Structure formats: C-alpha cells, structure tokens
Length: 97
Image (cartoon, rainbow, N blue to C red; front, top):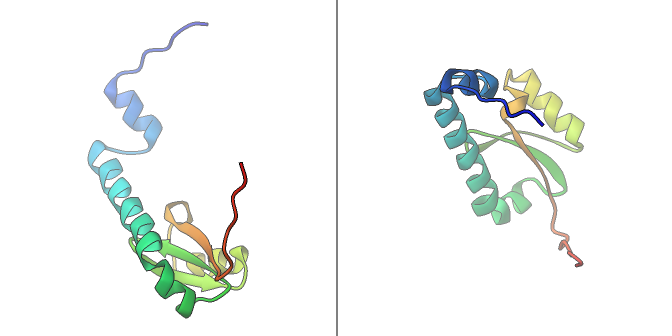
C-alpha cells in the first residue's frame, strides 16, 4: 500500500480549520463532556428520561427523543456537529463482558 504524506496545511484542511480553531473546538468538547460527567446527578432531576444536547459545557436543548433534542438545538441555530447528545435516566446501566 502506498503511503501518503501530508504537510501541516493539508492536515489542518482535512480537519476543517486552523490549529487555533481546532484547539478551541476541542476545548468546547471537553467542557461539554465534563459537564455531562460532573452534572449527571443534577441532570437526572432536571431532565428525567429526556435527551439533552450539551453545547459549550451546558445543556442547550432537550427533548423526549433524540430527534426532538436535536431539532430543538437546530431551531436555536446551534451547530449540530458540535453537540454531545445523551439520554438522562435513573436506570442503572449494566455492562457485560
């Protein structure tokens, strides 16, 4: 298989932006992921059995279904590709190996 070599500019173009933009988007994603992790107990009371759309570290939209939450976020003009979506439930999740 032939190996393709890309320079820094080509890699950034494939990733969709400048190094600063990509760094900013990763920081926003980290804030959103941390919000979901740290705030989950609070979200259980605020958004029981709902889907939430987290953007820039806060719940920006919610709905009864994934589609409802995504549509609510879109209606607010939020970039759907930058959201973290999660179903909030009291039910324990069991993982089997």
